[in-house]
Length: 320
Image (cartoon, rainbow, N blue to C red; front, top):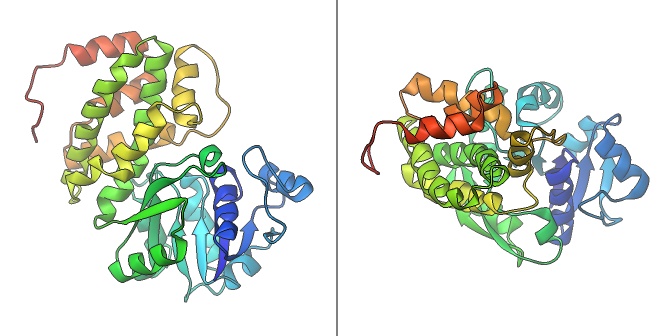
């Protein structure tokens, strides 16, 4: 199977490594002027993976799109719509697109599969691949479980057959709304977990796991998805890995931010929190933890926000 992985940053470079590992013909695409591409081109490795010589590196987007049977995309979620404007200049109509990204488009509040469809991609050729897993663990042979979801359930079965291995056990998703919302919002909870670590309140991560999942379940339900998705691999399973991981960018961002320090690497949860608060307001869902992240980023002290959250009106644990 010819696989093109578009994006050669942290997760993209792993996906190229993984698809080569399971025996596919892989091209790893990156922009010629990007640091991540330059490092891989010059050294054949980055801080996470060493690429096999069978993996072809390319900065030619036309070639990378048109040679592939399946196109995997792993880039900054806020750049997806503009990236599709470039992709759709080429012969893409018969390609399957797998989005290995977690986020909500900040300007529109759209899920990433919706962005793909609005960009001209056939709804039945779009899938999302999400769930827990850190590159540093996979490349040491430590397995995990993930989820594949799509609008076409036959496509899910087909893709799981192509991508399954002894490293990743895939589950068949049946709620693309919940899967995408759950995956995107786990990064928000990761930021909060980091803040709790930075404040010396790590035991509060237990309540965060419970109340954060309820918050996202309400949002998924309001958007027409299955709220049980919030308790699956796309959300709770993923952010359990995030909350306690030294490898998580979002958790590290939150920890450093609360200490007044700057974390320079990408933390998708920062932009996602703004998008989710706006989306929740539009559909009438209560998301106090997400709203608190936005207030914190805007300058309200974390200690004050924690106090405000504790002083909220008492309610039942499970409500709509």
